[in-house]
Figure 1 (cartoon, rainbow, N blue to C red):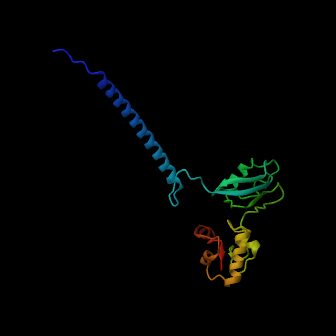
Figure 2 (cartoon, rainbow, N blue to C red):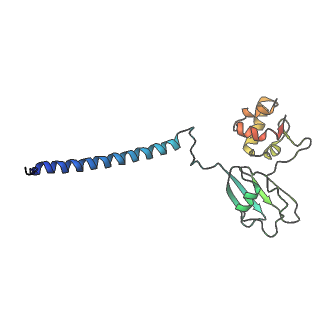
Length: 196
């Protein structure tokens, strides 16, 4: 028996089906890739979902005085004075290297003044130490004393004063949670630095 010849129309149909199958597989693969990419980017924007690509929180610090490049610098949350000095190009030749506490955390919006040798330490961003046990009394402190606290700028200090004027004395440090702009994280950072 000899092999029968396959009609030309059947052969063309088989080739056409193979081409259609390849095109469908390619389209499905592309569609799956697009869907996965869209789903991954949607995960990053869903509120409450933590993504590994989230940039760390930043603080802005004005470094002035005896540094090589004074100016405003954006640093990661939790940065210390040593990081701010490094960002500003390091100490100048005239700097008093013992004039600031290099291990102190910096706070958002502070001005860090590096003194010259012989000027003495003027760590402007450091919390002022009032008389007594060293804590700021929420019921007697003025705007300047409250402004020395880490993460408390003039606007939050004014809100603390406004709350005290409207509601009377603070009965506990936890009353700070009622002040607009103060949340649990800020309260935790202030708890050991204030008293009533």
